[in-house]
Amino acid sequence: MTADLSRARGAFIAIGALLGVSAMAVAGVVTKGVLIARRVLTPPTEWAKDGAIVAIGDGQVTLTRSAMTEWPGRYGMFTKDDRGYAKVGDVIRIDEHTVTRELVAIEDEPVRAGMAIRMGAAYYRDPRELGFETEDVAIHTPLGPAPAWLVSAADDGTADGAWAILVHGRDAGRWESIRAIPAIRASGRSTLVVSYRNDPGAPPDPHGRYGLGLREWEDVEAAMRFALERGAKRFVLGGWSMGGATVLQLAQRSELARLVDGMLLDSPAVDWRAVLRYQGAILGLTRATMAAVEWAMTSRLATRLVGQPAPIDLDALDAVANARAFDVPLLVLFSEDDGVAPIAPARALAAARPDLVELREFPGARHVRIWNRYPDAYESAIADWLRRLPARS
Image 1 (cartoon, rainbow, N blue to C red):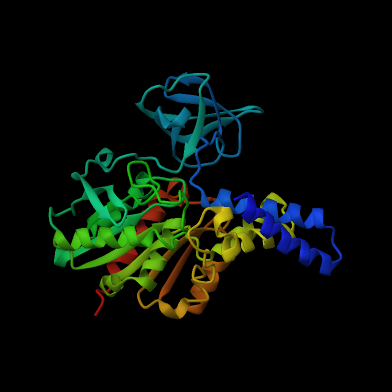
Image 2: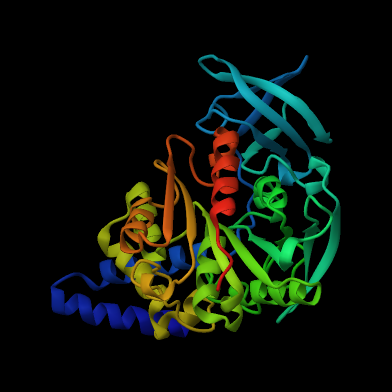
């Protein structure tokens, strides 16, 4: 890797010489770009902290104040390394340094004062918490078996072989998409909630990197094949965040896309290049640094530097540019102030394909947290769309 980095620096130094910029400055920019690209493409290993428990009891929990601990809605509250888990509800009181919220239930110990916590979008960790008959199954992906939940339809059977397959996002887990199961199940569909490469319990990617949907779609295709063996005939695909990019790739690449009736996308990465630039602006990164990040992802010279087997095709990950490739209805749910992915590409996609794309915007919900703040509106939007969704001819 050192030799590769040296060659990359050499290329940028040559460019810097042409532009009259110091070799050291250019080398620093490309190195920073490579490191950021690696971070984006590498499954996180650090546990995210949103605050700490100050006091707990009497149906309430008091937390140190932060943007996430004071955000409206209901959430899963997880302690260090996700060992403890509780459900928290509405904000009761906000003080200068603390936030007091409703404590709905402690589902898994340890949860006690003094512990660091994170506020997860996942309110449920298992479909069984909703009383749904659930089977633990294994999907035989190209890299090996990956765990999934199979939730039967409300009538104990799936009408006309209609199924749904739900795909979570980056740095999340299967539980992220449980929120959509009630509306899907009530529509007469069985639901397969899948994991994919690099997930806990699933096979690791050979290079230990995300493909941003460019490789993960193959694992979702494997889930479709599993469902076909169980009697499925057609599908609705659901994707959250990077899971949205994944199902959009499947729609363009898989021979089984012909069996897809529609796609449900929650806070999707519609255009990864736009996501990267959006995050760069939030972090205050320079245009030169972001150009280096994109170079590191897309250049064949940089593949070994970022640990990828091949360059990331950001053009292929731009659903707006490829809008004409889609031929089934899409329901896109997005928060106006998502904070992770920009809403502009989703609006552009809806403008490019008004015949197929239905965009529902929600204020102040944040990334993949629309259900957390607006559960009734969220479930109603999905249920209404499913009622109107025609079977693919």
